[in-house]
Length: 114
Length: 110
Image (cartoon, rainbow over all chains, first blue to last red):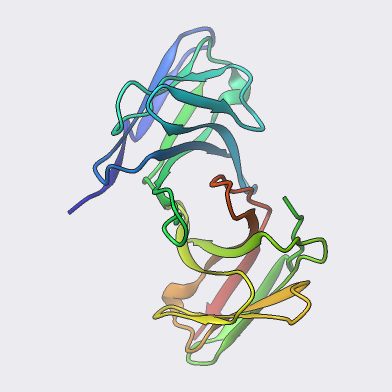
């Protein structure tokens, strides 16, 4: 079955280190998204992509970067991890076109920055 | 995107219908109403969406008022597994990203 996976599921890192979170989907969806969710809050959009080589900033993009070299993957990089980036990170994907835009979410990555 | 307003929390009895309101008074004609839910610690799950007409699927029904300024998500027979945070989201037809608010925490009680 097609799916969306995230790795690692849990990560502990130190302030200042570069961290990359992986997101892989097998639906061949054009659109991919990264969100973060902090305790007691809704999801906030970090970056998104509508196709290969396309990337866009979301509402909380500072300190994060993404690249889209193929359809299946959208890795999220924290350039220099900060304690404020401790959060749960969700990746999602969707297909383009009317009535085909439902976003499917991965299981999440819990990141702790010490 | 139009802003949505939802109650912070609500309780529902198991087996009864759960009616979740959402206000989106500034919605424009080319904006969908979407509902997602998030069960504890999991990724959000799509429930239903609509533009103007009422919609029904195997999970829920979506009732949109004629002026489109508010909507109600109906879970016809709530079960304990429906306990979750429910998000009402307004999204432009040609813009695929979603903006999540705080949602409504729904607790289904036996």
